[in-house]
Length: 85
Image (tube, rainbow, N blue to C red; front, side):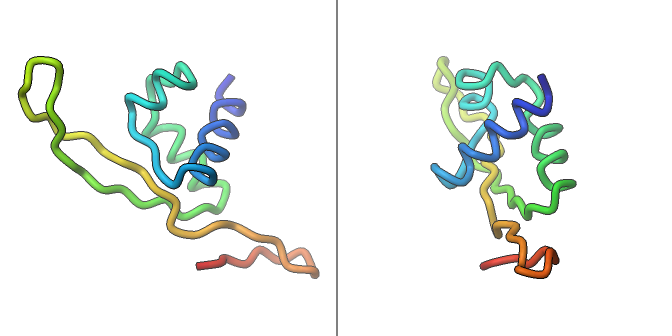
C-alpha cells in the first residue's frame, strides 16, 4: 500500500501544489504523511515544508506542517535526472 500512497501523494502534490496531514488522511487514508514525504524525497523530488498554526475543532491553534513541491524530477534524453525549478 505504501507505494500506492507515495504515487497518489506525489500526483496530488503535482496537481495541487501542497498537502497537509489532514488532507492525506482524508484523501488517501495515510496516517504517516511525513514518512511518505521521506519516501518521495528518496525518489529524487525536493519537497519543502512550512509550519503554520490553524484552529482545531475547539478553536485552539495547532501547528500543522504543509508540504509542497520545490522542484520536479525530470529525465533528460540521455537518461540523466535533471531538476526543473
